[in-house]
Every structure is written in C-alpha cells, then in structure tokens.
Image 1 (cartoon, rainbow, N blue to C red):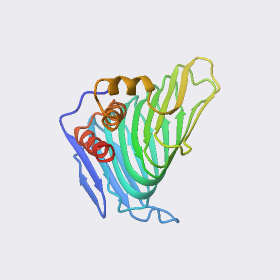
Image 2: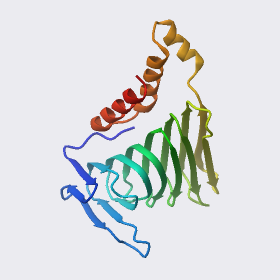
Image 3: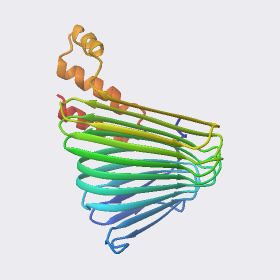
Length: 268
C-alpha cells in the first residue's frame, strides 16, 4: 500500500507561528487572514517525490489547508487541539500517488476534507485514526474528476467518552470510467453515547469499482474472552485491542509513539 520512504523528511509545524523545515521539493505559503472571514490559510505544493510531516499544535481555532500534489508523496499529519474548525483540500495531479496518514488528538473538532482527483490515474490512500474524548465531526467529499482514478479511505476511531460522527461521500460522474472508490469506516464505541457513520456513493457510471463499509460497536466478545482466559485483565486486554486497531496501517514512528502514549494514558 505505502510508497517507500524518501531520503528527506520535510516538516511543517504550525503553532503560534509557521515553522517551515522543507526543501525545494515543497512550496509553502501561509496567510493569517486569507479571506473576508479572516480564516488563516496554509498552502502546500508537493513538486517532487518526498515525505512530509505536518504538525498542527492547537494555537489556532480555525484554518484552511490547501495541498496540491504534483508528484508521488507520503504525508503524515499530527493534529493536537482543544477546539478546532479545519478544512483540508487535496488536489492530486500528474497521475500522482498520495498516501496520507493522519492522527487527531483533539477535544472538539469540526473537520472537512475535500479530495479532487484531477488527472488520469491519480490515486489517494487515506488512513485516519482518532481517540474521541468529547465531540468529533468529520465530513469527506471525494471527487473522481478523471478516468482511472483511485481512492481508498479508511477512518478508524475509538470513542472513549464522547461522540464521533463521520460522513463520507464519493462521487464518480458519468463517463468517468475505470475508477476505484472504496470507503472503510469503523468506530469502536466504548460508551452508550451515540456515534454515527453516514457513507454515501454517488455513482453515475457502470465501469467502476465502488464499495463502502460502516461499522459501529464494541470489540468482539470472543477476542476479549480469549485474552481474559490467558490471564490478561480487562483493562490490559482493552489496551492491547485498541493498540492493534489504532496503530494498524500507520507509518510514521513519531506518530506511532504519540498514539501509544495516548492509549497507555487512557487505558492502564
């Protein structure tokens, strides 16, 4: 699934100010007041094969992030915030393959993600993980604008004490043939609070491969019973199962360490 890791890890950190640790593979611009609503805008353009780590450290409460992909890349996103409204817009060009690995450590978030697959053969693999403690709302729009484009979107969340809502819509217009549009969504709900997943596929073409899945529930009782029968306590068994669920598919070592630390903080 993943690309090989490139030799140079570019890094962008946004807290009180933008800190840009990128080379010529990436163009970056930042406007603190980008429109009439005074919403800051971070613009990123990937021009050569590279890795990029984007850290959002919670000093802003709203932002638009535009990411233009002109070459194969891996993007790792680590977002920490108490309360945030954020919109991502990916434009994937030049038949590029973009892998996104994303982890949110947030209290309250309203997030929108728009993906435009803008050239023949454009491809996005998107893996998102979160541990929900209050309220998280996510809205995805995946636009297959050209033939033979691919989107594989995975959303995995563990609801510890809040409510998590996901809406995801994939669009394939008429005559946009040969596309793959997959959605894989699962929330492990450890509370009695209401969580929702609303998957949508809007397909106006026959020659495509499109699937969606949406599952909300607790861990399988058989898994828990097996671990308990091996002398593992319920809290330790929960810790192990959550690690297997949330860590799976993530690629960046720093983000993996952060996720592991959060899981051990909540379930120990």
